[in-house]
Image (cartoon, rainbow, N blue to C red):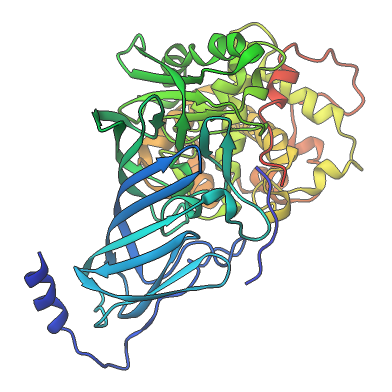
Length: 495
């Protein structure tokens, strides 16, 4: 993924509000951004969300979406007002059952002012009623709501929530989800987690999905259209739900040949990363014109273009590896993207070796040898690439080579302990590159600051001393058979 810099009960509720002073110097607006330097206006300050409850109604013919979002949160400061990230038209907002005033500001800020200020530590329930045509809305000159011939899809990074539900849109504020969607009979609604129920009434069908583990907002997905849905279980018992648009055409067989291996791949990855962290797994392939795949939690989004040249299980490995590295353990800030993309790419390298299409050593040598010292490839620092280069090839390839360099330095025993222990150490939370560096030193018992600095932060090709075991530049190498499949998983939306 690549992006750009963006410039800066009613009685009980009433009693709670009346107990709070109407005026106090300590009360102030929550910040319009959560503090991420890459995206200053993403997320918001002053509260922490624990749960999103979404009740939606969608009409595919007109792309009209109606919804009520019920957001459970707790204030982290004395608040006079607070923001949500959202684009659609809002008709009413209530805070703890009491109507609140609201206005839109900046590109995607919904500013809410409750009738009475909120003291720090106050549990709040925010209800937002809204409607609109998402495909007509844009922010910063783009949209992440993708229309399809029979509906639409919300799947993008680092943002997609604004087009379908109000949120605190930053990975550092994870929450659980209940998503219920009513669609005309014959249309389906797919989201994250487990399908709790399907019910029909007066020509409409309601699909109710639940994600019972913390989930970042950009990992929430919604697919609306006509799908062929398959269900199965992995060998270790993980329920798998996959879906394919009924009009994929020539890409259908290759998509199924790849995505239907989800259960097998989940079990295989568990050998390296530990038990699968969620209640269900799966993916979906809608009929879209986008070209990328995205690790939407438990229900991976795949563009049909990923399978235009035939079956591609490597991209399935990449996105499923993210279920541990990126979804279970999410980044603290967007500069920590290496923790997502470097490890998902290395999982593809492990799969390549498993499939006899090139070892991790051969793939690392390919990266190191193919790029001479003056190649701009080495100017991008995976540990803090900047928002313009957040999804550059170097974050994936140099990032995975850094992991091979770590393996070379600490040895296989410590390396695989690190690989499996990291998701357990930070389960369902957030972590930074610095946190990983400390963890790797703790487990291996070796000083690694110099290694990480050379591979993740310096805008130059790592010297031979930091690349022991790597093939020298210019060394004739046979390109591993898996190379093109691995590279196909790079990058994100081209806006």
